[in-house]
Image 1 (cartoon, one colour):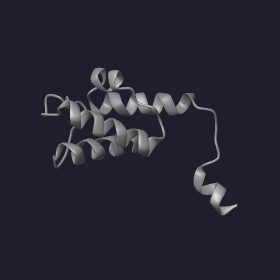
Image 2 (cartoon, one colour):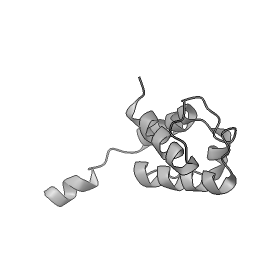
Image 3 (cartoon, rainbow, N blue to C red):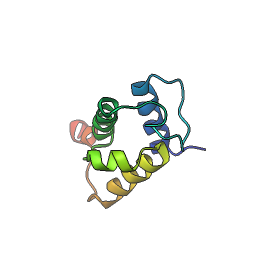
Image 4 (tube, rainbow, N blue to C red):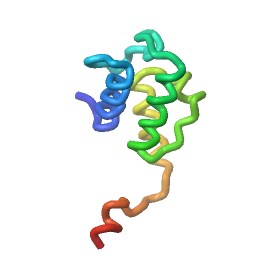
Amino acid sequence: MLTTTQACVAAICAQILGLERIELDDDLYGLGSDSHQAVLVALEIESVFDVNLPLEVMESTATVRALAAWVDAQRASLPAQTPPEADRLG
């Protein structure tokens, strides 16, 4: 069973790489990812999860499992914030 983060990262990677599906431990570069696609994956992950994903991290954590774990660790270290949508409602 995938975590929410893993499922989202897998969907981002699959979409950008033009693949139907990606397994947790598939190496993105082994699947044919190039530097341009790596940048697109990083930018989309940054946008979706509101994190800053340096390309060095992208290069060293080129699996869905590793990227999702990195995202979860980054988000866990952020101070608690009111979700942006709550500001609009209240």
